[in-house]
Amino acid sequence: MIELSDDDDEPSFRVRFVKGKSIENNKNYWEEYDPLKKSWFRLCNECRSKVCTASDCLCKIHYNKENKPKDKIQLKSRNMKTKLKRLDTKIKKKNNNNNDDDKQIIPLEVINEPKIEQMQINESLPIVISVSTSLNRKQISQVKEFLTKFHNDSQSVQFTCESQPDYIDDTTTHVITNDYGSFTTTVSKQIIQACVYHIFISSFDWITASIKQSSIVDQFPYEILRDKKSIKTCRGIKQCRFDKLPVFPSLYIISVECHDGIKSMNMTRDELIEIIELSGATLLNDFIPYKTLIILCNSKKEMLDIKKQNDDNFLLINEKKIYYCKPAFVFDSIVKHEVQSMEKYCW
Image (tube, rainbow, N blue to C red):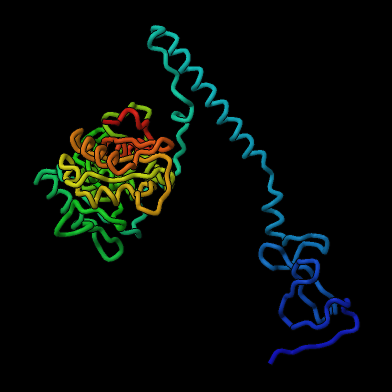
């Protein structure tokens, strides 16, 4: 039973109090009643412990944290700026030594790329691997050795799907490519799926290094950063992993007319539709108003057939723009993590 008591010494707005319980007064901060002293003491805004002094709003621990000297942090910040300045100066000097036609200053954002990821695999987290269809039998056997060697009671390591090891879904954590000693890879269905699912993509070197050292080594030195056709400063594939924002804004309305899928990538039409939805674009339907429409076509012949149908149905209205694009427009935008110019991909 909760004990209630009236006390003449209490302020008028506190009619009753509960022993051992804190309450919020009309000034919107929390207090607790001390029956021995017959008085109220204020509680910390952060943890509801007793404050240092009556005029404070924090306990001793949180007061010290908030008022901790920031000289070291400021010094580190100044050092970083100085370092960036030195790096920028070195790059400018180096470029000045080259011919005028070859001058190109690398942006500071590329040099000072933040290392936001944890540098070691957390062995309590499960690893679900999907392997590239381009892996040969020897490489597949090495991946199976990796799975067998490191799968135990405390660490789960397995294929996404035992019967189809190249399958990818939202449970997949790693995609292994057959690339060696490189941060680049060839664009394939799996690479695009991994990008829209924000999955870590690794070269095969991570598997061989882990087997050789008998432990799961740091994965990040083996991460695939970009596709082979991108410029060296591009980090699009890596960007897809830690940037959860979709590539396309929802205002990009896309109609998929690739009825045979993408044969060169062994991609079905349904898989292409799923990739478009995961990338953030909106699929066309009868209820979506639009001013700009992107229609994906596999060939020029397919484009001409669709265009004729649209013209016959009076779909093409003056105030609306329709772009008949190659599917590569979607794929390149995803792996570069930046919407590409549609005009470059029009039939």
